[in-house]
Length: 78
Image (cartoon, rainbow, N blue to C red; front, side, top):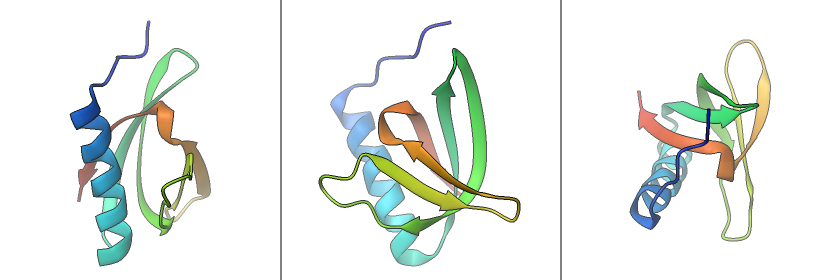
């Protein structure tokens, strides 16, 4: 299975949702592609992404996780 190619609008939307989720303290559902499989995690963004950041830091009740931004396929607010 291949990672889907995202257009610039989808990349921008994902970034905006991550930034807004941190700012508003909202949880998000992050769908990402890793080791040729899709994965999904529901989490809170624990560190806002800066312009040069390449990783998204999030946590849920079970764990803290760092997800490279280029793995992310979709971000949805909860």
